[in-house]
Length: 96
Image 1 (tube, helix red, strand yellow):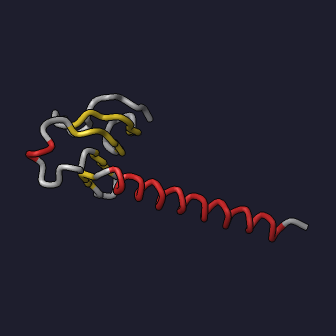
Image 2: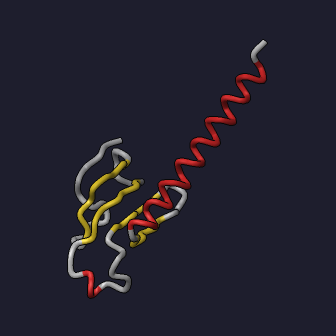
């Protein structure tokens, strides 16, 4: 895995700010900030881009505002927390 700073889709209207990508660049998740004039966008407050491409055919590009990005972060963080708590409980249940 590597974290280059170029758009994996080759977009010129977005500046990547964070990425994780397979070495062969076949799968990735990328977040960035949109470039250009917000008054020309369908939703002017959607200043962020979130892209995801997986091996199983999921390929998305989403324009988001700050609330949307925070919501994604919250849901993902909550899923990881719940998983960790479940794993901890399983370990405690098997401890003599």
